[in-house]
Amino acid sequence: MGWSPGTCSLEDGVAEELIVGYAARSLDPEAELGFERHLKSCSRCQRLAAQQGAVWSALDAWRPPAVSPDFDRTLALRIAASRRISSRIYAFAKWIWRPALPVAAISAVLAGFFLLKDQHTARQVLETQPSAQIEQQVEHALDDMDILKQIGLDVSAQRSDSARKI
Amino acid sequence: MLSRRDILALAAVGVAVSIPAPLWAQRRGGTARTPPHASRSDTDERTPIEEFETMSPEAQQKALNRLSPAQREKLQERLKRFNSLPPQQQQALKTLYNRLHQLPPERQDAVRKAIRKLSEQPAERQQAMRQELRDMTALTPTERHAHLASRDFRARFNKKEQDILRDMSPLLPDR
Image 1 (cartoon, each protein chain N blue to C red):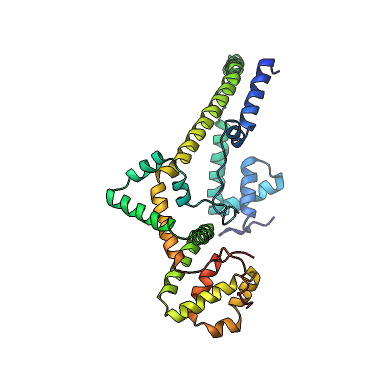
Image 2: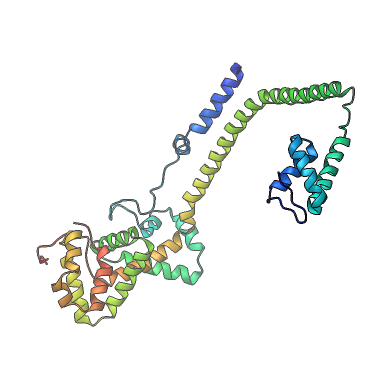
């Protein structure tokens, strides 16, 4: 690999790939040597390699928190508690459902009975309603009769002998 | 698993829900009223006048008492006048009334307006239109429709008269 001095002579993408590999120490010896030679003459790659090295150093320094000794026991207790609540809800629902069904049935029958009773009452009111307004209906009927009288036409009679065919 | 009690309860719900209301009403002695605009005979349907006159004297008086004295007197006078008409004319008016009330409300109004317009026409034109209506009673609805669109009809009646006759034609009995 030929590393030229001065500005970065590496193609776009190649320098970044070499920097990541160099920081991870995954380059082969020849490439690593060639990249070190390039670093001496390229301030941009020096800066990027230093930043990448800092990331790797931080990752190396990170230690995951230790799992508490009673983690498994605590988890098992929580699962058991959750199962107990579910089974209680299920038992309660089952307990309440059995008497609720006959109660619902009786309620439905009673609701139907009272609904029909109301309908019957309403119907009785409707049946008596016309007589409550009969005087207005008679007046309107007489108004219509007066209008219809103006036709002067006995349409109750079917075709009379004198009616000419149009 | 459902217990016997649950099954009985479900059956009760099913029965309560599935019994149709009209059936209940029939079992309770209810009678279904004829829906408006249902098919019926022009002469079989009772007019409000007939309804009123077949009420008991107490019920008639109760209805009349809801009116002011002046209104009561006027209504009684009008009824007297109607009842003094010859039976044949009363029957004809009753037939026309029932035919009018079988029409949708907007058509009823159109017929009423047409009759009023008819009475506003010159006497000889009124006579011509009445004769035309009499003649149209001999036609079937299809024939009437064709006649109202015919050249002969349009030649004998002006636009206003044609409209009057067209609007009044639903009153004519079906052949």
